[in-house]
Amino acid sequence: MTFLEFKDKMFDLACFNIYQVYAWKPDFDRNNLTRWAKKGYLIRLRQGHFAFAEYKNKPDFPLYFANRIYRPSYISLHTALSFYGMIPEAVVQITSVTSLKTTSFANDFGEYSYKNVKENLLFGYELKPMANNRTIQFATPEKALLDLLYLYPFYDSQQELEELRLDEDYLHDNLNMDSLAKYCARFKSKALNHRVKLLFKTYDL
Image (spheres, one colour):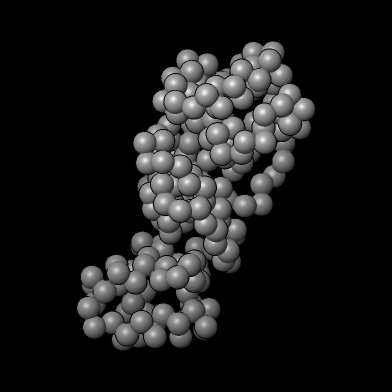
């Protein structure tokens, strides 16, 4: 099989795993993928997952791949908070929440970090539209903030919360307090409840 034949069939997927290839061609020689990656035609995202090199310069695809290479997952934590303008820092890693084990990957599209939560805590995300009629699973602002407080237990003092440098205008004008309360209740975590109360006190909410 030539690379052009392969590309003609798989290119619209943007990224793919070896099982998708075998579903199309059960006798496919996976050594082709290694060879094409060495030539720069493909980019290895993680074990058994690849993307076409042409997507490297297209916006949103690093975020889209975050959803695809480790599933189920959705973008949250620092990446989501930065996206919404709630924290001032530009975020290097693409951070996600998953019901699978905590892990990380690095490839030509960026650094990907996944934090584990119980399956019943995989909620509070929405599908954000991107180019080419695709969507990205993205935490709402309220869930991204709660995920952060839940998964990073050192945010247990006013000093630590102040150092987050959350945008106070956003907190007062844009944060949906009803959603925050409903989401928080679903965690059933006394520690999280305590950190949320500290957050309210720190930022005068």
